[in-house]
Length: 125
Image 1 (cartoon, rainbow, N blue to C red):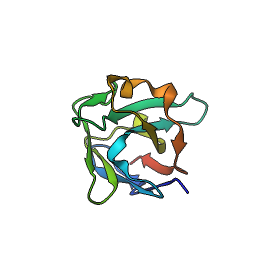
Image 2 (cartoon, rainbow, N blue to C red):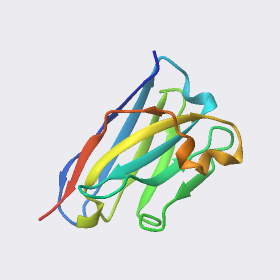
Image 3 (cartoon, rainbow, N blue to C red):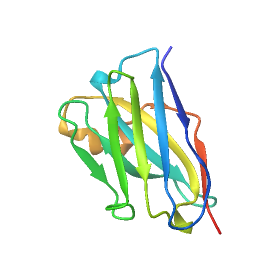
């Protein structure tokens, strides 16, 4: 059974940091691109970042570029999202998702098929 579980969310002050984890079970991440998405209240879900399965290439949305870093540890079957310099507008439920591909289409957010349950990130003073 394919399962993704996010953790690491919480309440943080503006300018603070959090590291989200996405742990996979039931399959190996080696052949999957992993993406992080977020959805704020009243807004559509947006793709934040993703990492390829083949060479570790990464993509970031303009809104998080320079502040967020995605990484993967295939030995632990886990992907991370390090979030620094957090802003109130980063407040959202964050989801990770998986897409089985070794190609350059890992940035095609609409193709991600397997989803976690989400973790809340709140940035507030």
